[in-house]
Image 1: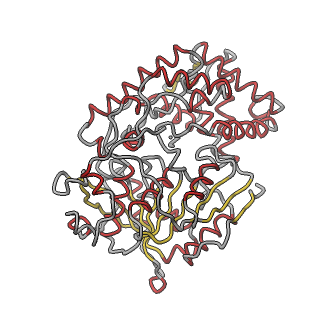
Image 2: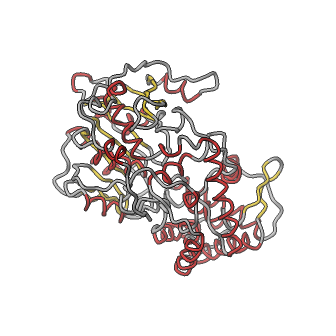
Image 3: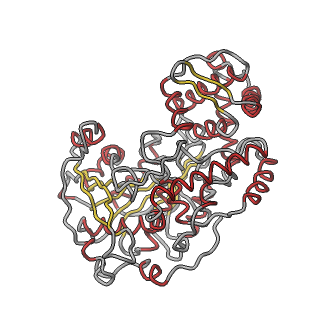
Amino acid sequence: MSLALATCFTASPAMAAASEAPAKDGSATGLDRYYQQHLGWGSCVKGPADTTGGDLDRAGVRCADVTVPLDYTDPLGRTITVSISRLKATDTRHRIGSILLNNGGPGGPSVESPPGVRKAMKDVGARYDIIGFDPRFVGRSTPLDCGWPVGTSWLSAGTSRAGFDRQVVLQKSLADKCRAADSSVLPHISTRNTARDMDVIRGALGERKVSYLGYSYGTYLGTVYTQMFPGRYDRVVLDGAISPNRYGPQLLKGSERENEKALSDWAAWAAERHDAYGLGRTRAEVLATVDRVVAASARGPLTVGAGADVFRIDDSQVPVLLFSSVGDDTDPTRAFLGEQLSVLNMAAQGAAPTTLSPKFAATLRYLLHGGDEPSGVQHAIICGDVAAPRDPRRYWRDIERNRAAHPLFGPLTSNIGPCAFWDRPREEPTQVRRDGRVLIVAATGDPRTTYKGSLELHKLLPSSRLVTLEGANRHALFGRYGNTCVDDEVNRYLATGKLPTKDQTCVKQAG
């Protein structure tokens, strides 16, 4: 799900001064005590119910907390902690250095990721200290919890003006809840401050340079780091890249065609399995079923589930369920979407609700009621990066224009969000003014961070190289999709530090 029209701002002189790489690991800006801090590595277990920490301990991972300033213009002021993990290199004779991880989001944790990344990196993984970190106010780091009653603010405006008006009320209430939870920290939750935290981590690890692997939003964070701290990075892999020129509160806008193509491809897959899902025997029939489900949910919420798990789903939520599954064209995810649409289709036809699978029930519970984890950080980051238009009438006009071309996904990608009611960011968005020798990885059919975003970033960084996977409707590739060609290109670069002499093309493997 995670996984965004920027206006210009004027950075304060103090913050502008803090935006450049500090000399000698912070000595010139009063940050030396952060860069030179001693890290107390120990168990990753936070308490008796912490199964993730136990798994990390058993995998040989050790954890620590890094102290960073809440406000980098006030290094003697309030501090927060950023949680990190480390899976040390075992081939110490050929050790390359440390590689930091970011799984996207924004607001995605990565403390738990080193064992999986070590596996993806194959032999070269043994030559790195693999460092996961939870960005400020995420996961095991100093937390922020806005107490949202829903799991995500990425919702559709639905099919009517009344539905949009309800969204305006909801999205304003979500912004108000974050402000009420802790207004003092919101101005300091931003990608640029996360990049500053990354450089403190680098210094605390004792590394002159650090390598980096970022997925999705993590590609934007990685790009920002290269611009703020030139000379501090070694090997950088950006998987599913976001163009910095397109990054902002409406992060999904512009992805409608890719999502329609992915949905159409899924419909062809589902048509071949009509006996299992009952959605239609042709692509067109399945897509017509999708349209009927959405129309039925607009007339009145669809009731699904039984017992303790009964949910009412309307036209603001059905497109989210579709959107969340078409970002992956593997059979398990396609089957899960088939299961969801089968249940919704029966509800649209008036069938009595039946018990849901645990996975579908958990998905709806999160979407409609939120989860056990703190909420709101994802949008706190985006809203802290780029200002959003504030007039709801502007969003409604945009929705109506987009709906005409993209009736299903346009009202989702153009919808108003909490950022319309947020305080203005403290800094200007990062501009790419420096070249960077990085490796960009992208699928031509990526429905989240579209392929054109990777092409734009590649153009902004002329020395970069692009590895393209053709024929896949998939977001996030390296070590996750199972494409040998992509994985080998990335690992070759991580092993040698040498980018390919020219851009490379891989193809989707059968099965």
